[in-house]
Amino acid sequence: TVFESELTGASLALDIISATPRLTKAHILLDSLAAIGAIQTRETKSGRHLVEEFYRRLTQLKKKRRTLQITVMWIPGHREIEGNELADAEAKKAAEGSSTPLHSKRSILSQPIPSSKAAIIAAKTKEIQNQW
Image 1 (tube, one colour):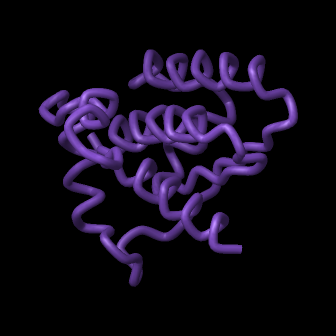
Image 2: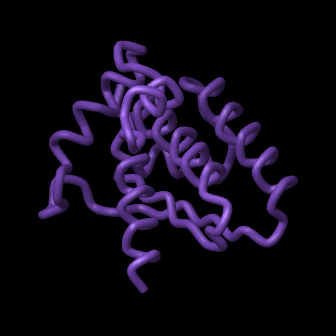
């Protein structure tokens, strides 16, 4: 589902953030209010394991980098966002388990390719922050 894809993407975004040691501030942008609500309240009937996985990764990351600021924000979906359709398709593949895991792509490619919309947005945000 889109909900599960967004939660999976949020967890993958944490992996990208974790792999970027100089980063001091990061935004995870999601277009699913349901996913954001589940992350905020930790209450959901479906996808609970995905919410718990997000928090497991977040807790590990915050233990290593106490000053890191992470914000989860809503963005409107399908509204003039570059690569949105591709990101949606990749997020669906990631949720279904039919895409290659991010860590295995690193050994094949010179740069890792995010496998979800949230991961793509996190990578793009990082790129923009590095340009400043």
